[in-house]
Image (cartoon, rainbow, N blue to C red; front, side):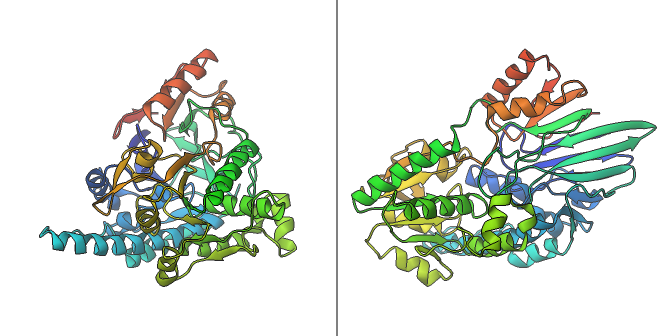
Length: 464
């Protein structure tokens, strides 16, 4: 048995882990890598192996850095099943379609600029039609329901508490008379976050493949993070500005809306318009309503009483059309605009930033981890000169960052997660993290007697 680390190695995005078992190939996740524009396109376009040689794909959750390259994978010849939880099937279907539309739209916009400069056009990585072809291969499976994707491998999904439908992937493997337990954490959530159930710690396993995004950081208490969020809203409204928030359309957007609703309901901030400018967020909210089985008890009660905060908020408007989106940039009254993408790389958020970044009254609020070389990271790093669609802009708006809102586990929970299998794990592989978090987490685990911890390079392989 071998594992090949073809994505999310020495970085957070682009999850793609290939297992070779009993002469078959099983792929865990197939996500988009996000980084430098030129590198991103080439890295996502090409695979280190033939997609036609893979027998099955298992998807941990629907975030685009875990599912977003499936349409390209299928476009390149993959025809097998794609297993995911029921909620992930619904979410990933709309997220991949949205990604296809965005890539087509962005390519069209960029090509207009390129034509003006006499430069050759680019092609989108894939289209909305390609996304539908990938969605046709989905097979939904319930949590804790065993299934056999390839001979000799039994799999079950376990609650990860990260986003709707997110799961760890537990594999029971029989190969050449050996019994091997393998556990892929996917993205690990946090305890006590709104809407979702808490993540479940791993069962005894021989090999643990786990994320380490925040291996060097303890998170602030979520309530403290939302106190900080409230202060950002208050001071921006006071100076008559807009709060522009790049946010993932699934998970983070709903949490923000939930807390804005609560703050306005309690009188903690004035009632101002809140706009969710992402067609995907509208569709995602509908998916939320179809899957009450994966919510915590409090959220299910809200749904049963038809007063779920993310969907029933008088100051909230979901923006559907491009015309509605453009109209927001002509308004000068205080407001909150939540728009995708979460790393400010694609979609309508780029237009809101372009129109608001040079006004000192406004605030850009960064509420999630930002990959290196993305526009979101450049903003978080307080760069004063940025480019949007190739055009230069001066960052005069306030840039505020809030770390405690992350849907990823912090250092404490990551340590707890790994040490849960200390007595059985022969090796731990750290992925989905940059070098410093991985090194720090490795040290923390060594202090607790776990010394077989590895941080593989991109395209590294390991014998299991």
